Amino acid sequence: TSPMGLRASSAIGWGGISGDVLATMIAQDTSHPLPGASAARAGLRSTVRAYPWTAAVPDGARWSGGSAFEISGSQWTASPRYVQLPYFSYQLNTLKAVTYETSAEGRALPFAELRLDLPILAPEYMNFKAPGQSKIQFSASSRTGTELLNLSLPARVGMPVQIQPNLISTEYLQLNAVRPYSIRRGAHVPFNQELQSWRASNGNFAEMLLLRGAQADQARLCFNIHALEIRAGAPVVKRLICHNWQVPAGWTLGQPLVSRGISVIDDRSVNAGESGLRYWQSEALN
Image 1 (cartoon, rainbow, N blue to C red):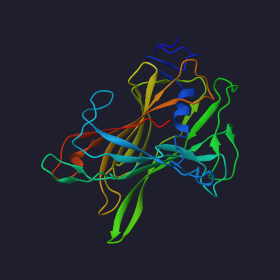
Image 2: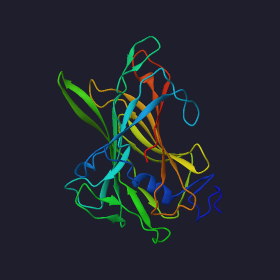
Image 3: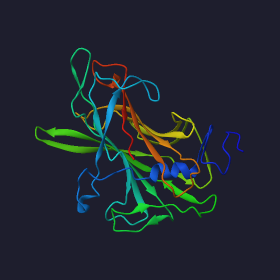
């Protein structure tokens, strides 16, 4: 048993999770077909609704005073076209509100759309298909210490920017890490720590955190994103996005985890005339 309360053979304990679980959190594709889509369109990503919440999850309850927004495909790994395998991209999107969030005074409060892209390397375990369709697959027979995923140095945060009255362009904030982050089979990954950070010289950053979940068999993979200056006219964002995952009893590498939804905490102090935090919680993604 490690000093953090996680046995080497355990997937999750009170002190943290295994590298096997962390790699699966990143690699598991939570996209799903659009309702009623034909087989030819089955690969299209649908969205799930995130509802206003009264406090940070796991506390609080659904709040009827605000508006919901969409999380697109939530997270998925895709092999970019024209990029040699085995490089993939981890993507997490929060789309703009279906309607604007409304303040107590009746003012419209914009919710900024945000996209996070993390290039990742999956050294050995994948199902080779056409570029853009490959899925990472791990092997339960891999040895302890085998590198499952490697998070590369660059990352980027993208947001739509209105550059002309009828023209919106996605602008990207380029970030870099000091060193790659390696996820290995059987490694112990402790809760409540920053696992990796990507930063820019102007103070913008994205941090990857691992936090305890709402239950003993759950853990949250979180990204704390500060995007305060992409270009003139772009929205500014301070946002914590967490995907809560459940580890089924008897789980082993190669099996899926269970999504318990994504929570969002928005720091509204970056917007003129606003203050405080706002909370959302999505439906489960499985």
